[in-house]
Length: 312
Ligand code: FES
Image (cartoon, rainbow, N blue to C red; front, side, top):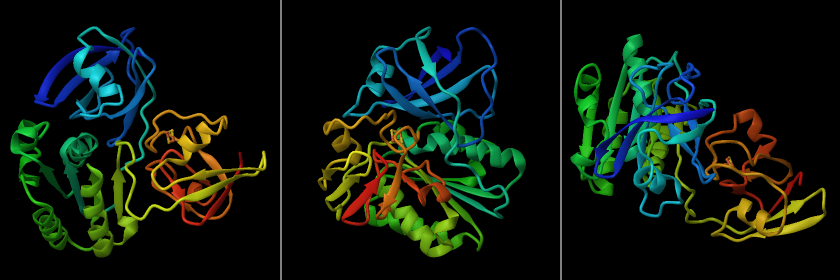
């Protein structure tokens, strides 16, 4: 749908908060805490931004945009060109980071701009009277988006800030927060890849992998230990080699394979591809457990076996 930017405010030196409304004045679709929308800019670039309102409103969506030093186009335009009145296309809200409402306790970790999906989640938990703790990690206190809201009621009493820590100090804080949480706690994490890895590894050891939920919008960085593999395309009989430092999607597109993509960070499902043989190494935030048994997202995911046979 067409949307218009109603207001823009600087949250930190590197984060802007934008309020969006339907261009025709109609009501915006409802959404669940943790949801995001696709935002398509005038040049056709599509990016995903979490909806971070204190309470869902049919009149306004609120998103926060961090200027990325290596901007792939989206954040630079929204910081340097967009103004109040600028028009955008937005998609329907989608949620791959839902709260597990029946959990007795929720422990949420936000690293930097990773606060954006988490913010609507903690507001919802607060409204419902659920037990939760929010831990916010940042390079410096003045780089915490929404710091004023996080320190004030109703979130302040359940929120702790952890700024300017080394990797070891960050790990120790995460350990302490996990140790203090009761059995049955569900853990949620959003932030930079190393931060998410630190949280998920520890949280899975404490509460089990099924109690750990993550959301990531960054472009996938090559991981240490990534191995090359071969995609066997069953429909054409071709094989496409995927080196360690490249995405399967990029290799397929370079080989001329007709495959659609949008987010290219594993959150939209556009590039979903059926797997017919071999085992995928799933790195997306989109597929359900059942879908993972049959499909993978080549924009971020790789193969756990030397050959992955796919329905292409
Ligand atoms: S392009 Fe969005 S999940 Fe792959």
